[in-house]
Length: 118
Image (tube, rainbow, N blue to C red; front, side, top):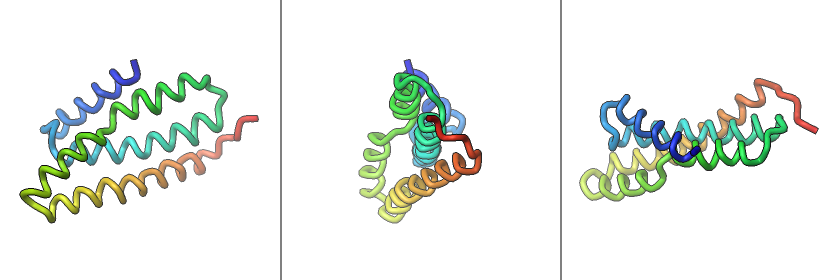
Protein backbone atom coordinates (compact mmCIF):
# COMPACT_ATOMS: atom_id res chain seq x y z
CA UNK A 1 0.00 0.00 0.00
CA UNK A 2 2.78 2.41 0.93
CA UNK A 3 4.69 1.60 -2.25
CA UNK A 4 1.63 2.43 -4.31
CA UNK A 5 1.21 5.79 -2.59
CA UNK A 6 4.90 6.65 -2.98
CA UNK A 7 4.97 5.58 -6.63
CA UNK A 8 1.95 7.71 -7.46
CA UNK A 9 3.54 10.62 -5.59
CA UNK A 10 6.72 10.22 -7.65
CA UNK A 11 4.70 10.17 -10.86
CA UNK A 12 2.79 13.29 -9.84
CA UNK A 13 5.99 15.21 -9.07
CA UNK A 14 7.22 14.31 -12.57
CA UNK A 15 4.01 15.64 -14.10
CA UNK A 16 4.13 18.76 -11.93
CA UNK A 17 7.65 19.44 -13.21
CA UNK A 18 6.41 18.77 -16.77
CA UNK A 19 8.60 15.73 -17.43
CA UNK A 20 8.47 12.54 -15.41
CA UNK A 21 11.91 11.44 -16.61
CA UNK A 22 13.87 14.65 -16.16
CA UNK A 23 16.97 15.06 -14.03
CA UNK A 24 15.11 17.79 -12.13
CA UNK A 25 12.20 15.48 -11.24
CA UNK A 26 14.56 12.74 -10.06
CA UNK A 27 16.65 15.16 -8.01
CA UNK A 28 13.54 16.74 -6.48
CA UNK A 29 12.05 13.46 -5.27
CA UNK A 30 15.41 12.22 -3.99
CA UNK A 31 16.07 15.40 -1.98
CA UNK A 32 12.55 15.55 -0.57
CA UNK A 33 12.76 11.84 0.22
CA UNK A 34 16.05 12.28 2.13
CA UNK A 35 14.46 14.97 4.27
CA UNK A 36 11.27 12.99 4.87
CA UNK A 37 13.00 9.72 5.72
CA UNK A 38 15.19 11.28 8.40
CA UNK A 39 12.25 13.33 9.68
CA UNK A 40 10.15 10.16 9.85
CA UNK A 41 12.80 8.11 11.67
CA UNK A 42 13.90 10.76 14.16
CA UNK A 43 10.68 12.69 14.41
CA UNK A 44 8.10 9.98 14.53
CA UNK A 45 9.78 6.73 15.48
CA UNK A 46 11.95 8.08 18.29
CA UNK A 47 9.36 10.44 19.73
CA UNK A 48 6.02 8.70 19.36
CA UNK A 49 4.92 5.18 20.15
CA UNK A 50 3.73 4.30 16.65
CA UNK A 51 3.66 0.60 15.82
CA UNK A 52 6.71 -0.53 13.84
CA UNK A 53 4.56 -1.40 10.81
CA UNK A 54 3.48 2.24 10.47
CA UNK A 55 7.07 3.53 10.53
CA UNK A 56 8.10 0.83 8.03
CA UNK A 57 5.10 1.64 5.85
CA UNK A 58 5.99 5.32 5.82
CA UNK A 59 9.76 4.93 5.45
CA UNK A 60 10.26 1.83 3.34
CA UNK A 61 6.87 1.88 1.64
CA UNK A 62 5.89 5.43 0.83
CA UNK A 63 9.25 7.22 0.95
CA UNK A 64 11.15 4.27 -0.54
CA UNK A 65 8.82 4.14 -3.54
CA UNK A 66 8.78 7.94 -3.82
CA UNK A 67 12.56 8.20 -4.21
CA UNK A 68 14.20 6.77 -7.28
CA UNK A 69 17.69 5.33 -6.85
CA UNK A 70 17.36 3.11 -9.90
CA UNK A 71 16.13 5.99 -12.08
CA UNK A 72 18.91 8.17 -10.67
CA UNK A 73 21.52 5.56 -11.65
CA UNK A 74 20.17 5.04 -15.17
CA UNK A 75 19.90 8.78 -15.80
CA UNK A 76 23.45 9.32 -14.57
CA UNK A 77 24.81 6.62 -16.91
CA UNK A 78 22.81 7.98 -19.85
CA UNK A 79 23.80 11.58 -19.21
CA UNK A 80 27.51 10.96 -18.65
CA UNK A 81 27.73 9.55 -22.18
CA UNK A 82 26.54 12.80 -23.74
CA UNK A 83 27.19 15.58 -21.21
CA UNK A 84 29.69 14.70 -18.50
CA UNK A 85 29.52 18.10 -16.77
CA UNK A 86 25.74 17.86 -16.35
CA UNK A 87 26.09 14.26 -15.17
CA UNK A 88 28.63 15.21 -12.51
CA UNK A 89 26.39 18.09 -11.38
CA UNK A 90 23.43 15.71 -11.21
CA UNK A 91 25.47 13.23 -9.17
CA UNK A 92 26.71 15.95 -6.80
CA UNK A 93 23.25 17.48 -6.39
CA UNK A 94 21.76 14.11 -5.43
CA UNK A 95 24.58 12.93 -3.15
CA UNK A 96 25.56 16.14 -1.41
CA UNK A 97 22.05 17.59 -1.61
CA UNK A 98 20.69 14.37 -0.12
CA UNK A 99 23.11 14.59 2.80
CA UNK A 100 22.18 18.24 3.34
CA UNK A 101 18.47 17.41 3.27
CA UNK A 102 19.02 14.59 5.77
CA UNK A 103 20.79 17.04 8.08
CA UNK A 104 17.95 19.54 7.62
CA UNK A 105 15.40 16.81 8.41
CA UNK A 106 17.25 16.01 11.63
CA UNK A 107 17.48 19.73 12.43
CA UNK A 108 13.75 20.18 11.86
CA UNK A 109 13.04 17.47 14.42
CA UNK A 110 15.39 19.19 16.87
CA UNK A 111 13.58 22.51 16.35
CA UNK A 112 10.22 20.93 17.07
CA UNK A 113 11.61 19.66 20.39
CA UNK A 114 9.37 16.66 20.73
CA UNK A 115 9.87 14.73 23.92
CA UNK A 116 11.70 11.45 23.48
CA UNK A 117 9.29 8.62 24.18
CA UNK A 118 9.98 6.45 27.17
